[in-house]
Each structure stands twice: as structure tokens, then as C-alpha cells.
Image 1 (tube, rainbow, N blue to C red):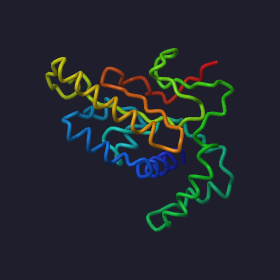
Image 2: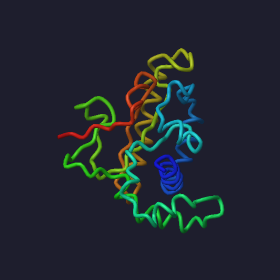
Image 3: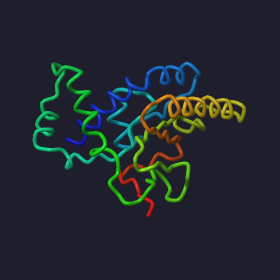
Image 4: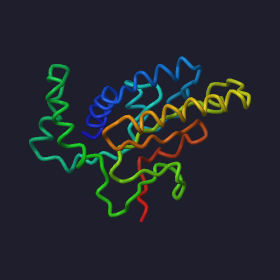
Length: 189
């Protein structure tokens, strides 16, 4: 159930935020995605069917769905009208994705590192790319690394500022491949 909700919500978010244009921009800029599923967390593997670089980080709590909502989620198929799916996601995402923790912040990486911090009421999106060329074997000089960081930073700023939703994009690279393996974002107490 959690995986189905994650995929449905991410597909909706991908279209709503126009993430395809950013996927294309990253690829057209020569910025490689991290190669190999062994270098991906479970969230990336699920969302990789939709996006090369982006994935949904929020924990998915389908236990907060009503029996009727669970039944609807189970029945979603290619034949389900997109407007019905969108209405369902709009009505449920706050309960299912946003932390009910008393903490104000959630960490999606090293505890205490503000780069991996999101407000508990934010939709957290991971953006992962082959920053240093370690997963692809590409030899990157500092000029190329700096140029790619500038492109990624611009894309992050556009996504976070061009949405009516509260969005936090957290950037990962091949050096941080194991951070989310256990799917346990850490609330800041």
C-alpha cells in the first residue's frame, strides 16, 4: 500500500511541479544520474520509473487512511480517471505524508546537518546525481563540478520557489548513497 501511494503521489507531484523539464535540463547539461540500483535507496528505485533524478523522501503512513480511502487506493488502475486520483491525493497527502511528530524538523540524512533538514509540513524531494563521477567513472575536474553544482542549485531554487506547496529539495550524491536505506527520517526533537 505504501509503495502504491508513494508512486501515485510522486507521479502527481512530478506533473504538478513540472519536474520533467528539470530532469531534461539536468540530462541535457551532461549531469549524470547515479548508476546502478545498488547505489539507490528504496524510494529512488520506486520513483526511478518516473524520474531519472528526483524521488519522494517523505515517509508514507497509509495507516492514517480510512477504510474507504484504502479501498480506493487499492482499486487505482490505468482506467481510474486522473481527476479522481488527483482529488484523492489532495485530500489525503497531509495525513499520509506530513509528519505528525511534535518535532518541527525532519532530517533526511545526517542528524543535525541543515542540508538534510525539512520542515515537518514540507513535501521533501530528493535530487540525486553523480556529483563526483564515482558511480559512472567520469573523471570530473573542479570547473565541471562547480558548473554542475550551480545548475543543480538553480533548479532546486526554482522548484522550491515556484510552487504553492511547501517543497524542500534535498540534494544527494553518490557519496551519500546509504543515508536513506532504512527509510527512517529522523525527527528533530
